[in-house]
Amino acid sequence: MSEPIKVPTLAELQAQGESPEIVFWVGCAGSFDERYKKVTATLCKILHKVGIKFAVLGTEENCTGDPARRAGNEFLFQMQAISNIETLNMYGVKKIVTACPHCFNTLKNEYPDLGGNYEVIHHTQLLQELIDSGKLRIKEGGPFKGKRLTYHDSCYLGRANDVYEAPRQVIESLDADLVEMKRSRRFGLCCGAGGAQMFKEPEEGKKDINIERIEEALETQPEAVVANCPFCLVMLTDGVKNKEKEDSIKVYDLAELVWMSQE
Image (tube, rainbow, N blue to C red):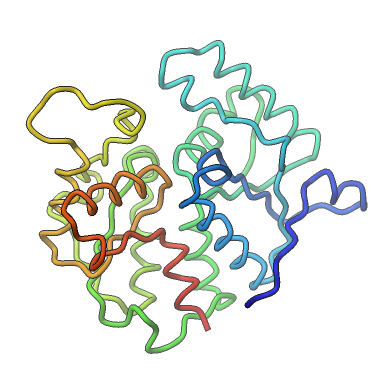
């Protein structure tokens, strides 16, 4: 069993007169969802392994305000955003990584209007940088060598921020066989979570949207489905269960594939 990793908070580092290279913005799902907490832990292990000095806000991290703004509550969004910006600016934060495309989009594109200016990257971009620089080495003949993997573009990483290639390059570095769904990149079909289908009963219709999406994934005859978003992960996993394929087809976050494949 590997040694547990102690991840410091920004407050703890500041008390020691230190500052991190990068702040890991964990997000609500990364903090509270049992499945995505495993992705949070995996990303921490990767950051620790490559020697990046990082920290989290801990209990000082509040919701980015993304759900409030999407629901039309601009007042609540600005309250939450300004509170976070005051905290981040107090610590002099320069660079943030997050595993949530929704947090990524809000921190990167919406906080600057309120005085929050940071370099914000998604964890798939960081993984690509680490692999390309040689800091993170993928072992030859890893567990996904030659495996058929299909990748789902999340809306807020893809269409909203035009990040399509970094995740695919990471998958290719695993020597896997990346098979595209018929709708991918800017034509990728939403899993439904971004339209709040994860949080409520679906509207009356012929088919739930996550079922439509997982059917597209299954058409590629994959051995695993790869996601980059905590909410997509839930919707796609539910879709696989609906098709009674959970024993044969797993849904992974990209960070999990990298961790299982590293030297």
